[in-house]
Image (cartoon, rainbow, N blue to C red):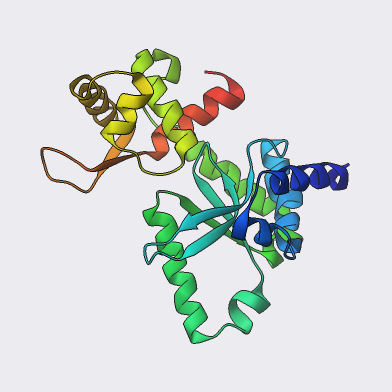
Length: 226
């Protein structure tokens, strides 16, 4: 059953990919497949919502890819084989991998790596780790999604689909409201700990990002109801 579902999932990913991401999807994905089979599908119940070879741009401007992304919680899952990520790695490659991990964090994603040995020999342990992490961010204090004003909910929904920082002009486009009104909406979201500002000064910021607390609210509502 897993093999058939994986094949359908992979074909769907390929169908919606282009450029370098398409090339990445045609490389050897044995490690990613092991991670899906022993960890992600058992924990999340299906392939729904997962993205293979998520494309990002690092802080140095280089394209980087995450093995598997869960957009709702902004988690990048990585399968790392000891031979390719440690035993045979060069110093330059080691430095690149560290810089890559920093870039993932700076883009607002949680970097969640597993070794292949762990996935193959201790799958239950790996699953418990992930369940615990989801539980921790899911237990964030605050209001439920449906208790938020509609404009605040809409900003969160659009932002999670965007999967990258957004500006006040984006909020204005999403809500079809003037900037001053949108600024008030964003101020409320910041006070509730659902968005954080990036760059700018004390009075005005350049961009915004959803927090883990916001992502967990959206995830819990979409998957389990609120």
